[in-house]
Image 1 (cartoon, helix red, strand yellow):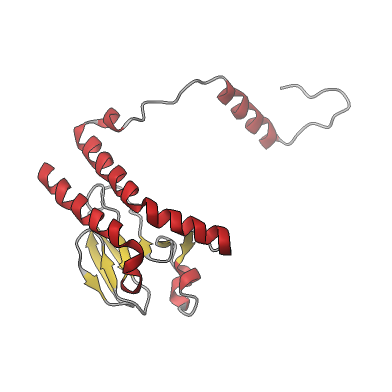
Image 2 (cartoon, rainbow, N blue to C red):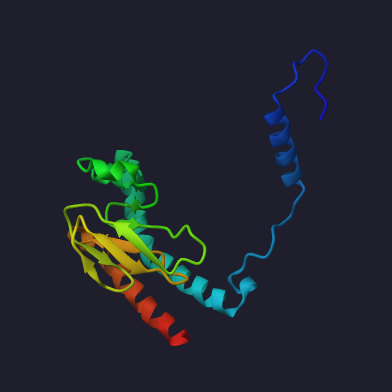
Amino acid sequence: FRVPEGVPPPEPGAKVTYGQDTFNLFTSSGGPNEVWSFGQEVEEVLTRLLSVREALRPYLERAFAHHAETGDPVMAPLFYHFPDQPALFGEGRAYMLGAALLVAPVLEPGATCLSVALPEGPRWHHVWSGDVFEGGSTAEVACPLGECPVFAREDRLDDIEAAFGALNASRRQSRKFN
């Protein structure tokens, strides 16, 4: 990378970024990323999760429309929806997807269960098991491959009724493979 005469040299980070961007111009594809590229078990999980994503499409479309109208984020930290609960300000894992779904990603490799602190107020429905938890409690939930802990606010179930049924149907379908 040479800088033309009379132009001050860029910061070192700019050189790296330029190099990465230039390299990416000449690549035509990435590695294998089709659902069948990683073996049958992963294919079954990814296929099921794609059907879950499709079931959530109407909910997500409404969430994005709400964002366009109000500026409220589609993905938000818990304290955004529960500002009167200071304990949630330090929550670094869980987030709200729209106003109805609490998602708690599994960040530790090999984890099989997760403790999730639920905001006070509404009761929460674990979408995979159907178990109901009181607001303000800590839910201990299983998190097998392909089942990130997701909870639906009881007072917003109408928002995701169709997807909620599809999630449970998806779980029943996945049990056929095991």
